[in-house]
Structures are given as structure tokens and as C-alpha cells.
Image: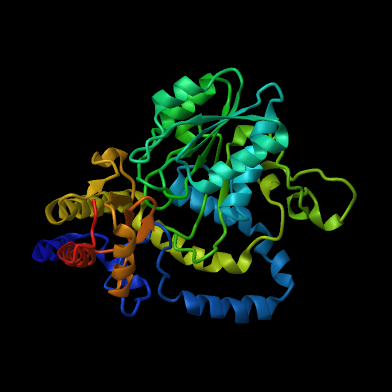
Length: 408
């Protein structure tokens, strides 16, 4: 099977991109690219150059010489490369949690007659916690959709949940646990038919799955940049606001960088026109430098080719799981149309297995209960790497079975 993996690597049109990431000494297989992307080769030099030439060389002049526009400029590049969105609707700012709060709160306040937030029970914890906080803060109600951890939110579930009281539906496009791809176009249409707004969390989609926010009619979206976009630990998030909502929504964190004329330092707050109005504080300039390196690779490869590679990688990983790991439960979709860039497999005792894998240089991550999540970043991951990593997993599981350490 390793020979077949090598053949797949030889035929991979994106194979050369693997050499454009920094190597990780001692790592046999990095299977967690959906949690934190690898650093792009040369990013340390780019940071050094920026510090010496832009920061030290231009000092505060850098703001008037371009930095001030980075939220919109970088946002437009993310939109063009990964979101299927026209310019002027996306900004780089804050963390995913902060942007999620700002956009969700703006949506809930949009129509005082609507006081209900619809969200799934297995959505990412931040999304659920933010929704709970906004509901308490604004006197709104939460309507929970019981989502299957092995799949994700469906159009049928949304249709049954929304109604005249719905202010906002908050959902993940790709479920963080299972990799389930929600039918964003159908769900968005259903939410609009109910007179409500929809906010999509794209954190596990962006840079791996093709998105068409404008074509789908999406109202609001947020996503992180440290996964498939390789922005690095804690890199800033992006927020998308459909153009038709720019003058209708008011986000609650009224910082000076979102004011229409920030340097007048005047009294009162009038938001900047357009999507700039969701900016609050100082743009994360230094943190955007590694992100731009990752974006350049995605722009060069093209999201369609990246998605094709993602589907091939997960299909190959699933083939190995089926062949090598009998008794392991797949908690991700088998249908590639419904499967994002990662797989989750489950078996009692996998928590300890992950610890052993890390010791042996194979790095997936663990998700409760008893899940191993295999995240395959298309630009930095090869088929042979997948083979070698899952071969170690097979060895570890077999050894623990012989020792009687695997239960269930």
C-alpha cells in the first residue's frame, strides 16, 4: 500500500507545494492541519524583513503608508481566494470569538421583535458559549437543534426550527467534530424565508472547501486563519458582512478604528461606512505577515485544486482505516460531497493511543469521546505521509490489543 501512496504522490498536481513549508524534525506524519497549519517556508525571513524594514524603517509612518487599510485589503484577498465573495465585504480583525460575538449580537439586535437564536447542540464550544451569553445579555431565547455528532446540521432540522421569532441561525459550515459539510445554500434560503439572518462559522471550511458566500446569499460569516490558511498560532480572524446589510447592522464594540474618522478623536461614535464598521481596535499588522504567506500559496494553487486534493486525501485515509482498523467507528460522512477536510474515528481507549502516537512522531488530535481526528491539509500533506502515520496507528492499536489495553 505504500507503493500506491507513492504513486498518488507522483501524480499529485499540488505535490510541489509540500516543499514550501518548513519541515518538522522528528515528525513522521502531521495529521492535524485542520487545527493548526504548518508554517510556510521563508515566513521567519519575511517577519524579520518586516520588523527591520517596515516597523523599524517606517515606524509610525507605516499607518498612513498602508497599514491602516490592511483589514480591508487582506479581507478582500481572503474573500477572493477562499470565500467566493466580492470585494468590500470582508475584513481581518480580532479573534474568531470576538468577531462571532460582534456579528451575532448585531444580528440579534437587528429586529427587536425577533428574540430567538437557533444553534446546534454539537456546534463548536465557542459558538455555543457566545450564543448563550448574547441570549442572557439581550433577553433572547436559545432554540437548540439536536445535531448528530457523526454528521451535522441539516436543512430539514433548520426548516423545523425557524419561525417568526427567529432572529439568527448560527451554524458551522463544516462540523468541527465530524467534518460534515452543511448545505449552506439550502439552509441560508430557509432562514431567509423565515425572515431571519444566518451566520456561518467557516473555521473548518476556509482554505479546504470551496465556498460561494455571495451566490448562497449568506448574511454573515466568520472564520479563523490559523488552520488551512497557515496564519500561525493565534492569527487574526476574518468577518464577512453581506453588502446589503452594511447600513442595517450595528456591531456593539465601538472602537476608534471602526469610527468613520478615527484620527479626529472627536466625541460620539459614527461607524465607518461599509464593512470597516465591524473593526474595533488596532489592526493586527504583524500577525498578518505569516497569513499573507499562506494566502499566496492558496492563491497560486487555486481553491478548486485544493478541494480536489482534500477529497483524495480523505478518501485514501478512509481506505486505510477500513483495511487496517477493524472495529473502529467512523464518525464522519462517507459521502465525499458531505465530507470536509478531516476524518474522525472512534474507539474506547483512543485517548491513550493519541499520547503514544505523539511520542512516535504521528500527530493527530483527540476529540471526546474517544475520538481521533485526522486533519489533512492539502497543500502541506502527502499521501505517503498519510500512509506512514496510519501505519503507526495500526501498530499502536495492535500492540495495545495484545496487551489487553484496548477496551470495548
